[in-house]
Length: 338
Image (cartoon, rainbow, N blue to C red; front, side, top):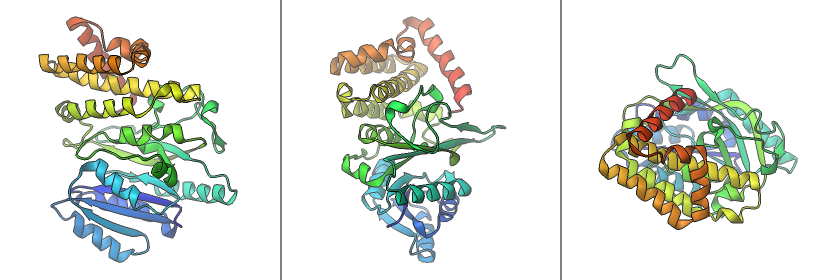
């Protein structure tokens, strides 16, 4: 069995996919790379199949009709044979040294019979034009270089949310929890990282900078104007996440509080972009989203609304909307997103 399956969802990725593939190939024979060609109309399929022909014991190509990023991840997971599973987007890449360090550590943990459900590492914002690359790590919040549980985690700062970039899940856990990402919808990475969390019993954090998260293309899904244009999809993802778990049934208080904080972030993101667009239609959508949460789970609504992010999203009038925009711009500079 392979130690790690890396799935690369590709849609018209001919300009940059080779970089992602080449960095993953440094994992050697212990890595499985599944390239999912999601209905591309450029040379993506040709490039992928050339790599498969060159590395038949490492690389598999799966061609499918376009189903969106989530469906490509679904396909990668369904075909994964590695003990662990990681998604690497085709315009991102991994650090080769960190990859080898992590794979060696996973091998050691397996040999001790104590491999964790979730392996975490740092990620780096590779933002075009940024003089300084921002590294997101979990120092001070998580024990390092040993297996631990949710109850051993300290306070996770806003910049320390657990994202797809930092996660390597046990493949069986993902399959057993029945995760299924929606088709033709952006921002599904939030579901991917959030839904499995209650199934995770043991974690391991290694302080190495593995994932390189590229930000800078104008058509990228996290571009601010693109996010505003696709706000209905962001709202859909947020509602799916709200419905995915009854948080009162989660035994670990620290995990429960973290998941509430994550939902507060999702509500904030949707609200911010609806406010920034500013039309009466989108302001009505913001109110509808908060009403939805209130009607679905009043206790959760109160907790999220009392959260500092939730309070700021519901300040009235133009002054309140201006406060939201200022806060958003400050956060963007601090955390390096968009």
